[in-house]
Length: 424
Image 1 (cartoon, rainbow, N blue to C red):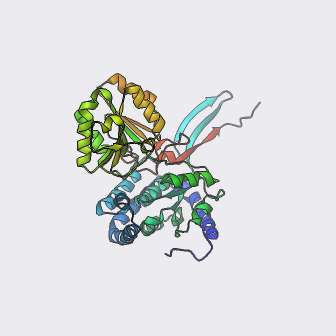
Image 2: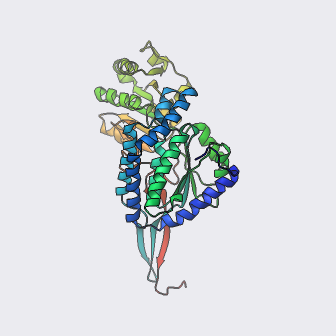
Image 3: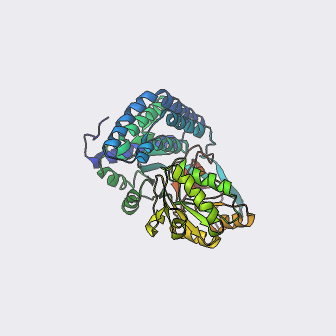
C-alpha cells in the first residue's frame, strides 16, 4: 500500500465510494450465518496477525513521539498484546449478537384488512472519520458489517500504518468468507483533501460519523453534504451529593479520572456538595494528586487544596483527555445540575448518593446520553453495555443517542401486506 494512490484524490475517493456502494448491496442481503462466520474469521486473523499489526503500529508510535505528541495521545495509539486481544474479543462478541437486520419491530392490522409493519434494514454505506485509537478501525468495520452496511474509514494520520494493517487483515477475512472485501475500506492516503472529497459523496455514502477533537467535528459538520451523527467531546461530571457514601465517592472519582484518562468517558469535572466539602475535597484532592493528577479548582477548592490552581470558565469547558481535573464546590443539587447543563456535552454524568429521591431526580432532570448513579463514568462504553463494541458515542439526539452498537446502525422501513387491497 502506498501513501498516495496514483490517481487524483477526488477520483480515488469517488472510486472507493462507488465500490463501497456496490458492496453494500451484497452485504445487506447476507444471511446471519455468513456474517457471523466472517466476523469470527476477522477476530481469529487479528490474533494471528499480532506481530504484523505491532510492526505497523511501531512506525506510528515512533512518528507520534517525533512529533511531540503527549504521553496520553501515544497511549491511545498503542496496539499492545492486550488491546489486540480486546479488539478480537470485541469482534467475537459482535458476531454472537442478535442480527437486527430483518427484525420486525412492529406490525398492526388496519381497517380494510391489510397489515402494516416496520422492519429493520441496513443504513447502506457509512463513512467514518476519526483520530487516534486504531482499535476504532476494527470496531467500526465489525459493527457496520454485522448491521449489513459497507463502510469507508478515514483514520487519523497519526495511526495511518496501524489502520491500514488492521484493514488488510479484516478485508482478507471477509474475502475468504466469500464476501466482497470492498465492504470494508480504509483510505490509503493522508491527504487532507480526502476528507473534503469524502463529504461530497452523496450518491454513495448514507451517513458520516466523525470521532475526534472539536476541530475535526466542526469541519465535518460544516462541510458535509451527507447526514452526520456527531461523536462530540466528553466533558463528563461526577457529582458527590450531600448524602453520598464518601468512601464510594473516592473510589468512583479516582476510577473515573485515572483508570484511563485519555478516553472520552473519563471524568473532567468533579462537583462536590458544600455540606461534605470540608471533609471530601482535601481527601479526594490528595488521592488524585498522588495519582499524578493536576487539579484546577473554584475558590472554595483552592482554599482547601494548596496544590490546586484556580479554575476559569474555560477550564470547565475543556476536555482534557489527560491527568487533569477540575473540582468545584456547589451549593447543592440544583447548582450541580445547572453546572452540568451549562458546561456538559451530553456524554456521561454521574451522581454519587445514598438518597433514592436525589438519584431519581438526577436521572429525571439530567438528559445526557448516559446518566449514572453510584457508578464510574468509565462504564459508558458499548462493549461494557453489552453492545459488543461501539462505533461511537453519539451526543446528538437524532438518530441515535449514546453508545452506538449494531442496532443503531440500522434504520426501519414500512411494509404492507394486502390481498388485492385498494384505497377507497
